[in-house]
Image (cartoon, helix red, strand yellow):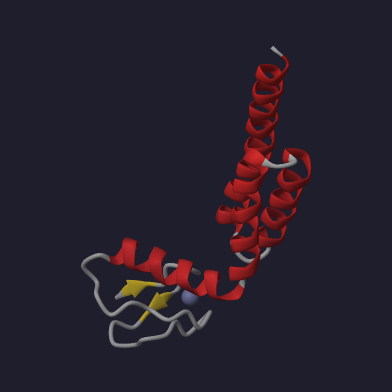
Length: 116
Ligand SMILES: [Zn+2]
């Protein structure tokens, strides 16, 4: 007997899908946790690849260009991502705030060196 990594229900050894939540179960039992994480991540990325992509692009842009605006977009994309992938969304929101702060510091450093 094994357990569904998503809902924790008992699943039959031979069944490929969880009878309770319908999650596709990995066929290998050996690396169960890693496989479960990968399956889950792939499933979730499939539903929100755009938010994640836009979020990370804006995070990078915020480091060099208008950090407040692109940092805010990153946070918004992170918020939208949280609806499908809470962990990744939270990371993206933190990255957005961090990107905005670092972008402002970099901007201040570049602006400072410009004046001196
Ligand atoms: Zn399940």
